[in-house]
Length: 175
Image (cartoon, rainbow, N blue to C red):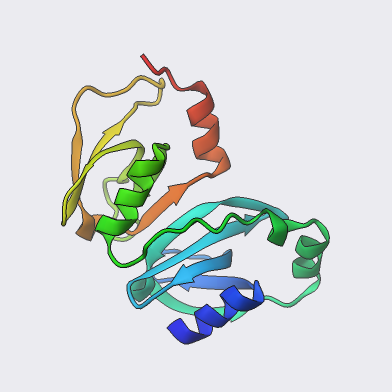
């Protein structure tokens, strides 16, 4: 499957990806993939809807989307808007170190076995070989004093540069 996903990068093809823990397929343009991680940008309603990194092992299947809506995406210039971030997908550690260096707000999620609704949005403070130290903020845009120490093994999804995250970034209380 990894080799087939790599071909979609070269061809800039829109794909519908089905993950084990997500009821619906996600429409994505692939940016990078290896045996551990998939990196792509989601397409939703003819717009790029944020960058995501997920575990390759969580992919059930995918299909190439070659229909009129994918042609509209081309006419709208979506492929030209894709940013090919040079993220090293070797490990969670290399991924989070890159994102920490960019100093941006990101979100991390656990999408399976998620009885507690695990979702954090904020900044990476520290990266170790098996966890990140993460500073998040509450629903009122106020930074929490206490850091979250999150083991990599519970993370299914890393998101950045999405409308949701970028809007929070614009209005967050930085003090």
